[in-house]
Length: 274
Image (cartoon, rainbow, N blue to C red; front, side, top):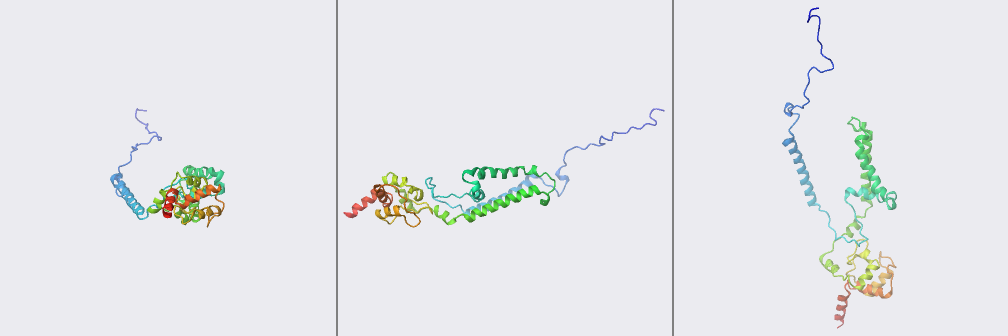
């Protein structure tokens, strides 16, 4: 056999004949299907965001957040209400199995499981399908979370007394504010007022606590009437609230009857007698 005759050289079928570079083509090679990220795509995103931001700012101007009076840490009758996006958790903490000694269940365990399932959703359902009907795990988690949030939010809105909430945070006018600020917190009557727990319903400056108790810095009662109310109650105020001596009761009654400033009230009485 002569050299070069009767022999053929074949390539290895396992090796591709022509290698293509693994570099994506430029977007200009796909006319009408792609666009430049900057500034074309990003500019449109910014415009949409700017429209949303302007609309949100207009909404805050048209419906500003309601202002309430200054926060009083001694006001035990004030019931705070969270923002609407936390109402579902607020309602959850009202149930027996998630409140009291079991608060950790409603505040940590249940939200932790919910958000943990949300984080693990990509690994719990790894199917390639894009239809919701063919993604049972991811779809059921989403539907369950949305329904639970909507239901708890609705229950919280329905069960909350909005009229009392508005009354408890009502701001005082200038005259009432001046009267409340003139309360003598160094007086003996104020000490009794605080010790007897009156401060919980009527505030630290006699300004009231909304639905829990009305303001009492300008009551139209004489000291004897105030003492009788403290013992026997009036309206929604139950009897037997005062627990002390007759001398303390008289001091408290004079303090409240004078608008929280017994020295000033006593001076006015002396001037009127003269």
